[in-house]
Length: 447
Image (tube, rainbow, N blue to C red; front, top):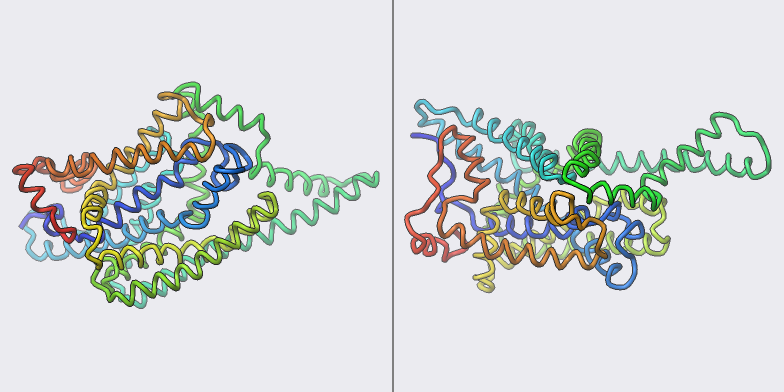
């Protein structure tokens, strides 16, 4: 028996639908990074922070910040486990094919390459595929753990970014205290020591990281708009930071923790839609109570402080305390709706989007690169925050239309086909027998 990609009839419907929601939803947050400078967490930097712009920030901060990425990451963990389980079955009957372990690592390294292409060639500094690929190399060693161990380790790993952020907050307080004392002495006419001057410089650098000078932001806009090469030169160092320092300090633990929980949720039947309705309802009620409560507190604190650096640093500490429960609440809502005989057409379409999640994710980068950077129209920094969501709606409409159209004619999305062909070392069949048969196969969202 030869190893081969998952057939359409073997797919898990709720996984695909959830993946479709996640890949569309992640653009809600990414669009700010694509279209505005230094405005992702602080709307006062650029793009407007009043009226419709403030409400656009509020809605995302309350309901979506980090949660679509959270769903995406849970699903990656589940998908990795499914792949390994399926390959383990094939290994028992394998002849000359590579074993499941080799295929898994080849598949994961290829995802790293996709991430590097997305980050450097498509100019998306917020790429997540590189994170998933690197973390996936480590995920392999947890595949045989039982559910309680996966949950316990996952939660423990997820606590690491919170601990790091708390440590950063304490260090920031110490820097601020030293700097303010030095500035008070300076105002009184005293001569400052090198150490005191350094403390002031440290605080100024910290503030500049969060709130760059307008001239600096304008220079960044011009460089990103000027040409593809100019945008690449400006973004490459930022991208490198996110894929090294930031990933090591925060991204790896976030990804690994959520992936382990995703593996556990698959084993529990939560991600396959086979858990009890009461389970999904509990996830919703508990997750929204905690997640929305924390997020509402963060929003109130940020707004009341005028988005001060102190408040921003405080929200880093509570970030996952709100984000993780809210992610699970969204998953509970999806699972509850999945078991409800309503919105069947929407479930089918979203499942098609999810089956092409890699293609759709990369397409978002390509389209936004052409819209906002010098590779295309150069619209970076030219719109208010709320106006960016007109582009989101347009891209959603395109992907909701083209995903079913494509999968009525082809087995895989273009990127999925390439990924599978390179993983298995042979060209995978692309076309299906006929559009009619594919449409019939897609009538139930459980396919």
